[in-house]
Image 1 (spheres, rainbow, N blue to C red):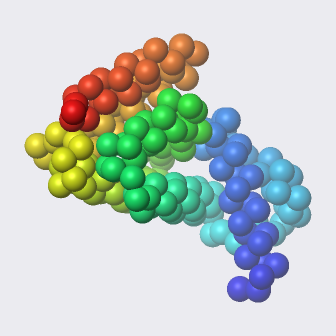
Image 2 (image 1 turned 90 degrees about the vertical axis):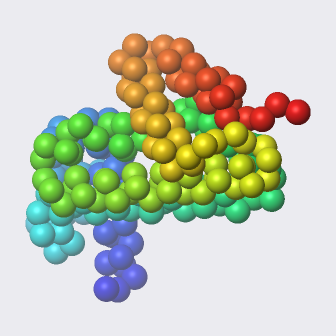
Length: 190
């Protein structure tokens, strides 16, 4: 794949993600994606075999980028508790509203198996990294967690649910409560 082809494909994926965050997968037509990307209509199938293949690649690109950002956070030299607070702050400051899993999770699970599987792999990778952070917190003495993986899965589910409620109501109270509860339950007090 040439650099121009790679750049064009990345542009299509980025514009598609932005449109999906607004309108969902079913609500986004290929012509709108190509128009937003500045790509001729006939060239879509040069890059993707189907709309579902395109959706899977959008989800994979999003998951890779999101996981890389979490890896950057995990690699910091601060305590695990401090990194958890930074992660929770990012969610409460709007990450949840820009989360493709929040927007597409229920829709994708009913559409196409490759898209559902891609999203599930992304969620699994994310929760495993979050579990690693919680485990580091147990080891550095700043977090109190009995089962890091179970807690990571529960925390992510709570954040997703709170983000959905925030989108529905326009009120971030549910998200703030999840963040506050998580800090209270998991961070060891000196």
